[in-house]
Amino acid sequence: MSEPGPAKSSPAQADIAAMAGAIERAAADLALTEEPSNFEVALERGAPRD
Amino acid sequence: MTDLTLTELASAIAARKVSAVEATQACLDRIARLDGRLHAFLTVDAPGALARARSLDADLASGTRRGPLHGVPLAYKDLFHVVGLPTSCGTKTTEYFRSDHDSTAVARLTAAGAVTLGKLNMTELALGPFGDNPHHGNVDNPWKAGCISGGSSSGSGAAVAAQLAFGALGSDTGGSIRLPAACCGIVGLKPTYGRVSRAGAMALSWALDHLGPMTRTVGDCALMFELIAGHDPRDGTSSRRPVPAVLAGLDAPLSGLRLGLPENYYFDGVTPEVKAAVEAAARGLQARGARVAPLRLPDPAGIVDVCNVLARAESAVIHSRVLRERPHELGAAVRARLEIGLHVSAHDYLQAGRLRARLAREFVGEVFGEVDAILTPAIPEPPPELAAVTAGAVEEIVRRMGRFSRLTRPFNGLGLPVLAVPCGMSSDGRPLGLQIVGRPFDEATIFRLGQAVEQASPRRALRD
Image 1 (tube, rainbow over the protein chains, first blue to last red):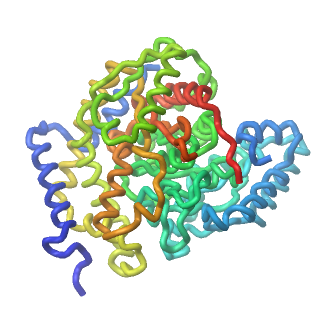
Image 2 (image 1 turned 90 degrees about the vertical axis):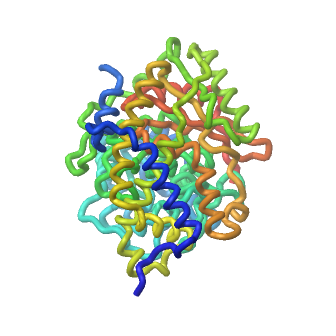
Image 3 (image 1 turned 180 degrees about the horizontal axis):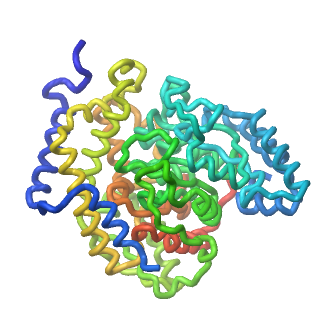
């Protein structure tokens, strides 16, 4: 049985390639210290001061 | 009786002017009368709801009020687990999602005295903004037959707008609370990421999922928010930050609040009627003392790319079993969207998570140094006809989905709180909606602004 997924050269494949390209370009200058959990830190630090 | 707001009904029950049984029966009668067209409910638990209402009436007669929602009938999107009721998540499989516990949000509402009427229709696996469902029927727009109800919390939007329930819960991964709220002319809150526990609700994307209330008024929404928000040890992403008393500050003056109207992206391609309605709401807020100014926001393209990668990868993993074993059971557009996620690399997924952190930090720092909240349309046009948006090839339908949810999706990636509020009707009687975006964990300010928008644009009565 073949793996489910878009056929080669389908519009979906083009979407995947476009997504990957966009992420790669934007991530090129990320700091070494950047990690996904900094997202929650950003929210906590941006909260109104009580 | 069903035209009372949730808050009015709760007060009437507390004053023993109305019983919980009367309120519940009124909703059940209305469901029986109207839901043949709307398709808002998947499960109506009439015996369970009436038994619960009788028990609550007996409690009140003996002097016990369970909480602020004592006797108020609510209903829940069919991805919230409620013990004893099936949870299909909008799929063909009746018990797609199982849990030993009620979802935390439902449990908290029940503890506050709510009556569970049943479970609400939704787009299959919460993937899609139009409210169509190939297995359970398309949810119709209560205001304009044949137009979309918005999705994916389509049943929640329609049930509340059509007064089949006094309030509902929905989920929002890319706009799925705000889009049906706007399309159905009601209020919906996507809280800050981490503010409302997601335990016991089906996930679509751990990074982007948010759960929240949908109601007919801002005050009702604030009440439900206060009850469901707050730390939950069952959800690892749940914030420990205390929940502010948002209800108490709803009518506070707006003087001193700074409000931004985006100059870029959020009004691009929006119909003139929607644009005029949002600008009129902004003028109304200005007249109440808020300072409104144009504002250039960071380009949302980056966070939208991040959302696409995170949502596709995570949803494909979460639903890999149905995709692998029973793909023929899925609707064509849902299957196509899930399958893309199987091909997202681990490298891109992790880079997207890192990028998200930077983009959120930059957005919060840049934007909320200038303003306290942002005002944008919630939907780019009045709810379109369902037949028009679901016609054609799958790829074209998926592109339309992306266009319709383009104004809501960036804020899932950014994790910010957003309140969708009605802001009038189109010339042919379709609802228009705006969204108010706040700084992280500042739901109080967006509720306050939403209350002022609502007061300037009174709710219209829905004719059956």
